[in-house]
Image (cartoon, helix red, strand yellow):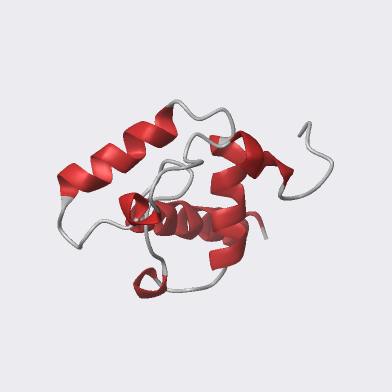
Length: 93
């Protein structure tokens, strides 16, 4: 359960406030930069709502249409979470 009444109010508490956006959009293959961004997210008090919003926004998009590090996960990691959730929903149905 969230303590935030406004759906985006959690952003005010994000660890990434004031950090350049490009930090979270490393060049393809730049694992060091991706790990740096994920390290910032690791200590963030609102990592979960950030990740939840990213997953909701990206919905059915393919891996090619997911970008950056959000909620402590790379685009590929978020796609894997989405795909696993989709598979478990199919199994449950």
